[in-house]
Image (tube, rainbow, N blue to C red; front, side):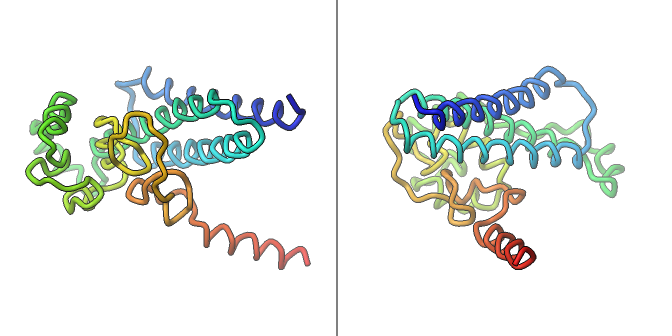
Length: 213
């Protein structure tokens, strides 16, 4: 094992630990008091950690083709999207300041939630899991597209679909195109706005180069 591979594994392990800690803290404090700003800041931070982990893992795979690296990434990916779905659910339950009064009057009305059983039934019937009444791929569903990214992530995760192609292919390698916004390995419909696009990063790099030249 080369020194570079050892370093990449160390860095990846450190990032995984930080992502796991963030997920565990949120799960332990299920009844804690949150505000949207704090939750969004936490999501920004975890997104940065996740994509740094992904970059290290991609380099590691080019140097070492061990299948364990892919399994490790799949585990961290699931933790990341689990956290994103959880934060999305929490932010939906927190009213904005302008809507506080309206929230009080409607607090007794429970929002419908899609159960895992419902997902299984719809998958068995080959119907779209988002609109439930049409036979089309999830990524072509207008109802799915109208949801925010957090809700889309929650639906894909609960259905155990691939985060890249939004389909079920039971562990087979996915060759679907990467996100068109940031080029990371997930569907564009699952892109979170707090992660910069490739264009933004290139512009930032060019600006930094201009300042140093």
